[in-house]
Amino acid sequence: MADDHGFSTRAIHAGQEPDPLTGAVVTPIYQVSTYKQDGIGGFRGGYEYSRSANPTRTALEECLAALESGGRGFAFASGLAGQDTVCRALLTPGDHVVVPSDAYGGTYRYFDKVAGRQGIEHSIATLADVDAVRAAIRPGRTRMVWVETPTNPLLGVADIAAIAEVAHAAGAVLVVDNTFATAYLQHPLALGADIVVHSTTKYSGGHSDVVGGAVITRRGVEVAGYEDAAERIAFHQNSIGGVAGPFDAWLTLRGLKTLAVRMERHCDNAEKVADFLTTHPAVSHVLYPGLPTHPNHDVAARQMKRFGGMVSFRLHKGEDAAVQTCAAVSLWTLGESLGGVESLIEHPARMTHASVTGTQLEVPGDLVRLSVGIEDADDLIADLREALDVHG
Ligand SMILES: *Cc1c(COP(=O)(O)O)cnc(C)c1O
Image 1: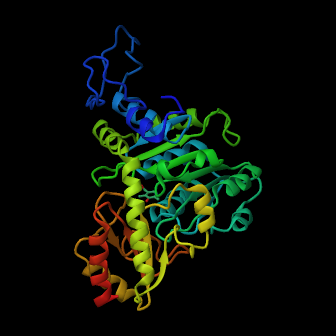
Image 2 (image 1 turned 180 degrees about the vertical axis):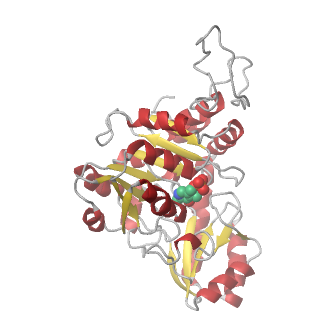
Image 3 (image 1 turned 45 degrees about the vertical axis):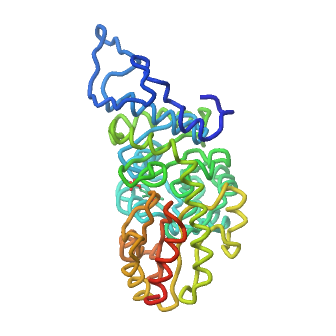
């Protein structure tokens, strides 16, 4: 699929030619583990065994690469499986990684409890501050800078282009977790990132019906000192085996086709919800990159098309008020995860980010996180208003 096609054209067609056998316009679910060989080693289309490659997954991987304008795409069973594969492919014991101070809780847990035991050290930096990233670099040892922007759950924004310069000057690879913004709102590779990762469980799948992950590498062989980053990731994807199954790949592909229209509506609704929250007396802070009061609003405006569907807020009356508000809504569903068509509410300190309690990544107890869905904004706001009026 040519690069000069627009985003939605690529989302609907890249990697998804009508099935050559039947003309089926949707890529079939190749629910199969192995493939007949035409004589030993005579693979049809390169397919040998479905851990190594499967046609439904190939379609998704090509689509993901096209949407991020990347070199190669890889689909995994979860976002964390993709993250683990990138780290094992590119890091060796003794290497050091800079990790965001408000990273997704599972990302931090991975670096702290899993990679740490394998000899990969990390430092935490507030990525909204480029100088803090520079200060966290250990010359000669830092091999990777991990960026999440906007962050989960505090909606911090990092300047990808500026951090790319810092990372590359140190000889480190820049990985950007683009889960919140999606390929529709933000293009980290064009801003200097080497690798993009996603939890496709969230907006890319978009319907809360599948768990998955994606890794996309920058074009060109040379990625921050690795001549063969994409090859290494391909090798590790097959060697570790945390791949997306055919049905999961198919659901994610189906989700991607409507990503652009869903994101526009998520953004419309999130803007309205954020505006409402700024006017409610129970609310002390509204965290949304689209608000001019956001500390890195200018950076977000420069590197994002719009500001996404996630909104967090804090309450004057503290943790009890936050917990009660989460319980009092009726249209918003109390739940973890995000990015689906239905609106979700949660209390990060006790739910998604409970694993970082007591660490430098601990989140405030008075914080509520919203994943604003694509229902009618008026209904969402009315429900929130009722809960906040009584419990906020
Ligand atoms: C959910 C999430 C992940 C982890 O993805 P899984 O699919 O749950 O493994 C990573 N990063 C961010 C920003 C997330 O929201």
